[in-house]
Image 1: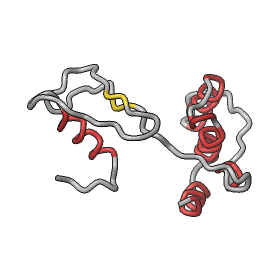
Image 2: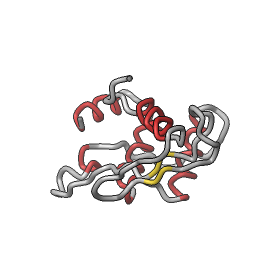
Image 3: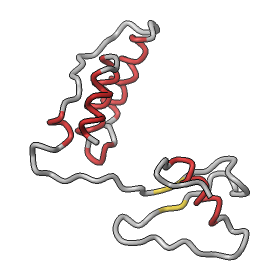
Length: 129
């Protein structure tokens, strides 16, 4: 997968390569506000709507944690707040366990399938029902 990502990234504009690097090296892949501001400034500059372009460093394989022996994983922590999904009330959230299993249960019509449908839309690995 890293090879596919790197091949795709190589074909992207400089601001995309830099944004990917910033996300890849951020703790839990969540960029700090300063990095988010740089990304936004670089996007605006690329669109011709801004003057400021920050220094851009393209992503490479070393940014993916492969050379350090570090194992990183992505964890789905929450679905939501939802809006216009099945009959779920707007603003609801479903929080997931950071480790182990999250069990979703409830009465009929309480929203279990709504969250499943929401997750299914976001995950290409999950077949439609």
